[in-house]
Length: 175
Ligand SMILES: C[S@@+](CC[C@H](N)C(=O)[O-])C[C@H]1O[C@@H](n2cnc3c(N)ncnc32)[C@H](O)[C@@H]1O
Image (cartoon, rainbow, N blue to C red):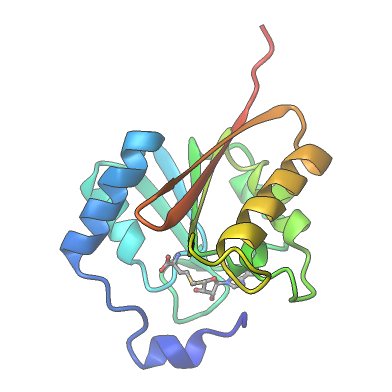
């Protein structure tokens, strides 16, 4: 599941520029896309380019060397990213969707929380199927659990728009 290399060598996802821009406008209406952004996992970079079109300064990263930007496993902490970003844009991270895959998804979200005070987790959902193999429940449940267990001092807001679950984790600031 981690290895998208073959898929990317064949061209990867086929998102049109218009699709990307419409999707990002929809995300932006829930949570603003601005500033220094870490796009991870970035895939071939369609979302990086879309974020750049919106004026964001984007760093991209994916575990696949075919992906755009820095080749990095998000389960590993990257000290050079510590506090460097305003936002982590994490679209399609299978760790939160496939709870049947033995993977350290809590490590991923904990690591992301050290890079920026706001994290956006976006995943396709099928609201008509809330069974164990659907996208919606595992993603939502994973994020709810992670929030409670590992990031209780963060705020979690979420929504479902146009078949996408969007979870926004924001670090609470002390006053
Ligand atoms: C469904 S794709 C999403 C790509 C892109 N964000 C998008 O929305 O089109 C999942 C991506 O996660 C990457 N990935 C999987 N495990 C990873 C890990 N441990 N660290 C970094 N990237 C990972 C894969 O290589 C793949 O590019």
